[in-house]
Image (tube, rainbow, N blue to C red; front, side, top):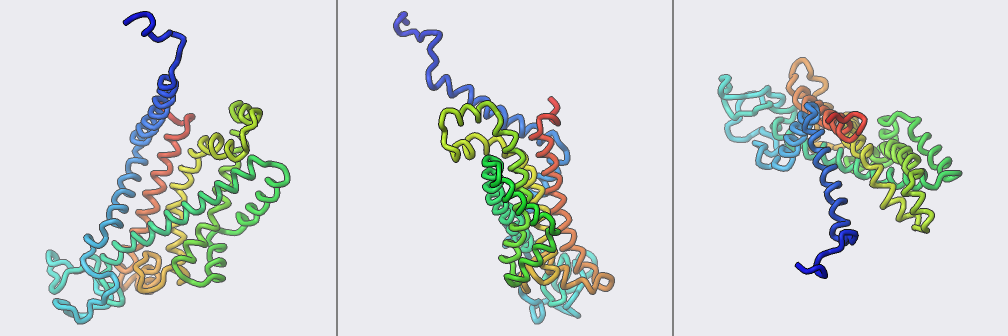
Length: 320
């Protein structure tokens, strides 16, 4: 190679300039994944959530019966069907097999629990995503603008936070009418202040950084600063809170359905199933045990994963 063909040592091409940033981003992602996988609680949470997602996706193949079809009059069904306990041939049970028994309407409880995972995960994830989107916008604008805008917005958020979340959700659903969509909307509304205040606190710290001050002094539009420079540096607490919030949303959705304000019969929803069997805890415990265990497992999985993400995304808690 001639001297003219050799690149000057002080010349840095665009590809070389972008390469360190790309490597740094990949290193952060890999290191975060390593921290998550080193956390036993996070791994257990991932396994539980992965199992639930698998069940929800393949519910049609996993379920043994139609979740809303009564077994009365079906071939192979014998004896008293409504509220029938778990029936397995290996334990000497005759007739059709029902792993978790039948509910009070003679519907297969296993199939209803399996399909209930779709409803609960859909409500939990959708409501949290909506709350994060709206709450993030409110928190970003409030924290960056400051002054009277911040005071007015945050005082309104404080008013919403003053009410117990479940009580406020019940009020919203009562006004709009019972139903799964209204329950989802109510859960999202009561969750917005949490994310708004969380984002605002992060914005107040990030907007004083040197790179934000430099961008502001160069005349960069405020929206560009907010969404391209401040927002990416406030995602870590939102990811953690959102993961924990899904478990809370699933629990609140079950509570609303238990009270008759959420999913309506014959929709297979865990809280609604608990409501149907609440008076038969001692005579037919399988009616409340299996849907209750499903709720507990879901909330546990998201809480464990949220705790693991908090440790992985907080540099003060990371250990090399």
